[in-house]
Length: 71
Image (tube, rainbow, N blue to C red; front, side, top):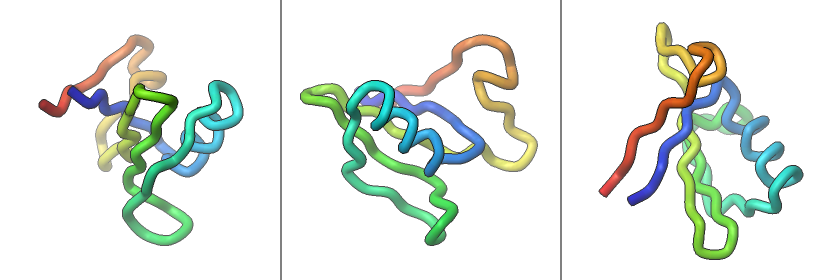
């Protein structure tokens, strides 16, 4: 399973996860300068960062945690 977390700014979220927790970015995809996703890891822990689609709210905007899992 791979948790997916939705953010408005994937590049900013990736930088924050790296600085705050020591995650490393494995790869990112989307437009240069404005990625639509990234895969991050810390040891054996992996997480996907997804950019919010138009009209979609992030967990922070909703005021509670949300996630999806890839199996």
